[in-house]
Length: 112
Image 1 (tube, rainbow, N blue to C red):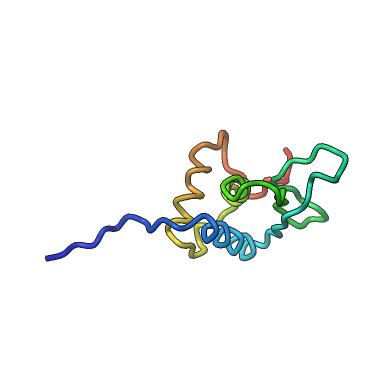
Image 2 (cartoon, one colour; image 1 turned 30 degrees about the vertical axis):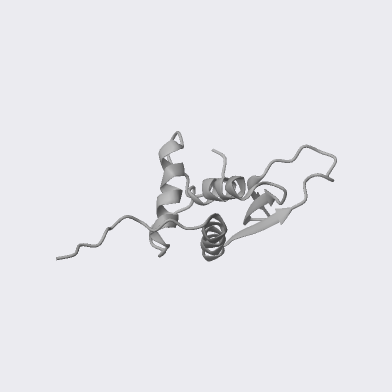
């Protein structure tokens, strides 16, 4: 009898990043990669909320691993348990939930 492994399949970085962007779209989060070098001010990649719309803005010059981290941190703050995602993506996002301090927010843009 042959038993199959239940370990998640590892995805290539580009594929994982695309899966994260697809999840963001399903959650209503706009993801954009921008050139931060010519802004004249210090800008950092991450989550922001503009006119009640959720955004994740990423410096297009970052390496793919850092882009995935920025988007993963953003997405891990939103409820996505009811949405099907590839097991490797869910595992990746769970890493961020485990390292976040304090209670998870359903809306990271809200301040209390």
